[in-house]
Length: 413
Image 1: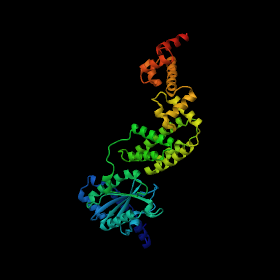
Image 2: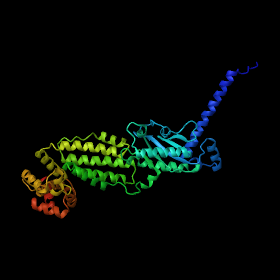
Image 3: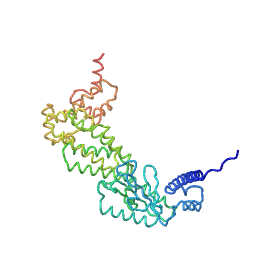
Image 4: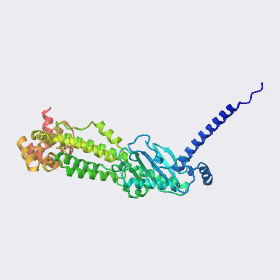
């Protein structure tokens, strides 16, 4: 049976479907090539430079100058509320001035030709002279931009610069919405890494300032901490981990000092989530300042008896470390002499004697209940060395540590 030729409208529909199908794959290929052109993968393949340039030119990528701009929503939303080309007032009708593609979670714009780069420069100049108002399109976007290049094969250098600048987004100050290639040389080139020693130093500075209600001292410590974090060679994730550890260290010390007292610490999960989800360092410091105000407000209501309860709790749980009136008096807001008098009045012993007796009693327990060597007992009880243990034991117990252990063993038989 002879088939009937398609009627005109069927031929037209078939041609339209074929055109749409062809256009779909053309756009898909163009997007893939654009992405590889920007990242540098395209010219890193096996095809010849000339052939790739010819293909890229056919797709409309040819221009006399290029610049890559990476942008995302300032508040970290998945999709930017505004298109960069719209903010630059660039005609998007035929894509002769820009191309756009998504790489990862960020919108990447390839500016093409001098007109597009000049529009971008005017946009940046206006940005620098007039801070964008909250709620405005410019206020909702964060962007970094690379160096202009004239060769298609060098586009990835512009992209690499813009991408490198994104590392510093976390360290930007409030309302800092742009980072450009000229600023890369100003960024920290330090090779220093965050370390536990500095964590302990900041923990001590901050907790002391909190307890003493020293606003200037506290602000100085926070400023030093922020400067230290910004100068590190570590990445954002490591800095956030450092801050989480710092919070737990401070919380532990403050709980020891204010034992039995209500301290309005936020839940650990709240602190961790806030730190992990903060886009910028200043957001974490703003959160920390608010929490410190709450802690200090509560601490002001403590009576002297409550403070002394905390002093003795602190001594009883820290005698194994070097501990003196000079080291703990500032923690509780007293001078050395006055705290010494308060301890003597309540304990019936001078501060040094009270600490010695805490160590002696702990040493007795270790000698009776363990097989530790005497020098190990000295270390665990907080004595400077084994000779110091012998001297104090003779003074307060009347016999040597070994004689005390033998007496305890004989009495248990």
